[in-house]
Length: 92
Image 1 (cartoon, rainbow, N blue to C red):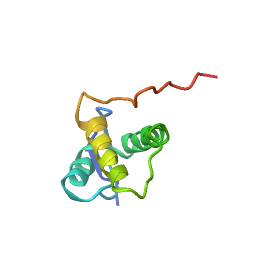
Image 2 (image 1 turned 90 degrees about the vertical axis):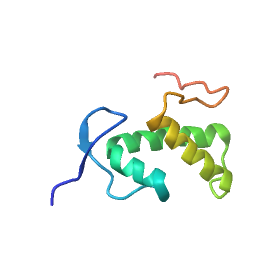
Image 3 (image 1 turned 135 degrees about the horizontal axis):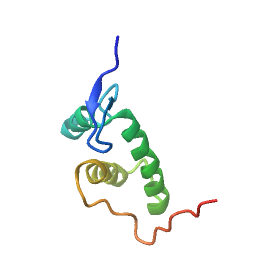
Image 4 (image 1 turned 60 degrees about the vertical axis):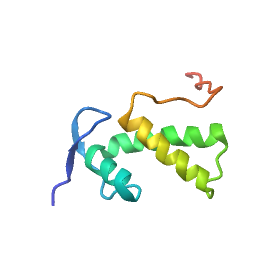
């Protein structure tokens, strides 16, 4: 069976898509239909930084809300914001 391909909104290419929607509901469906596995992996790396910068408790409903907000920002808006005070790591 061949991989499901999507025109990735983030990377602008036809790439292998996700195997399942990453979150429930309309947002999960939107991501599933428009985001490649590669772009999703990049988002997860970005979200790890968000978790650390905001010191999120992943068991809290607030973390779920921020996760969904960041998905929308990262893939479907031009308003991606870094956490206040974020300093990118220095290249080694």
